[in-house]
Length: 174
Image: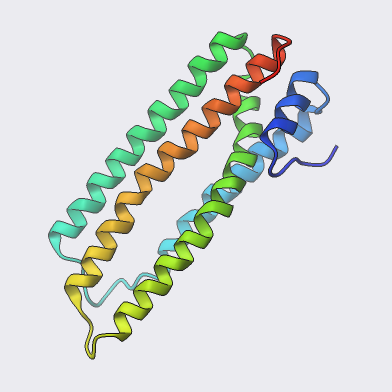
């Protein structure tokens, strides 16, 4: 069976029927680990020297980072608790597998939104004869606020997928 990229419901059904081999399930975990490792490279283009963000903007980033870590912790905990209500078995394989279609949906949703925001930022930057630092800082803060919100949406969708899997394992349809 090939990897199921977008359909949480198909993957939930395959997991409930036990048709995926251990290696097929492990590929989902490997994919998520690789994508997580690649996300760190997004910070590479940032210049080490040059214009530094103001202290208050850096403080916002720190706050967004802490909030994001809390969202991840409580999101995983909620998925774990939902899995405990199902049968308290195979949490890691389910988490790895179900993360793939949820992540794919997030990329499909977020990429166009990100491109629109980037396009607006470029247009806004061109409308001023010289760089407008206040507008840039506001954009940075606005984008930073989205991080925890998108993480919450991700774990909400993932928990729903666990709940639907539980319904399938109990013999019901959702």
